[in-house]
Image (cartoon, rainbow, N blue to C red; front, side, top):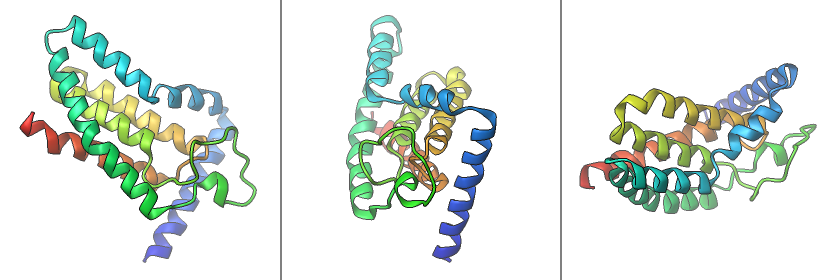
Length: 170
């Protein structure tokens, strides 16, 4: 069963990367992926905290959620040690060097879903846009060759789960 899932993951990866190459979305993927870097969340959270009545609630929820998500992410990534597709698959040319060699779960996706789910809890009207943005970050990580689709699913579940775990006690 595990080999079937792994094979399906690789086939989906190649299909997504192939489609993205034919449609020239690599540069788009790099830009979208960059919006998932940690400093963006900090700027957004602090900006909302200073300018919005619910900003402090969002900031507190994000902080608590990241305090749960980040150690779990590091534990999973360093325990599973799944090699990134750009390092594991023959014939794949990567456009940049990722920060480490392991792919499961996707940290960018986990963080994006912490942000999206937190926004959905505090600003429900913004939920569709926040989740669309998080999905785009996850997709960009596949296009860039640094994650398999299952890495993205795992990251989304980790990020969402961290917020849903923390939100009732914040």
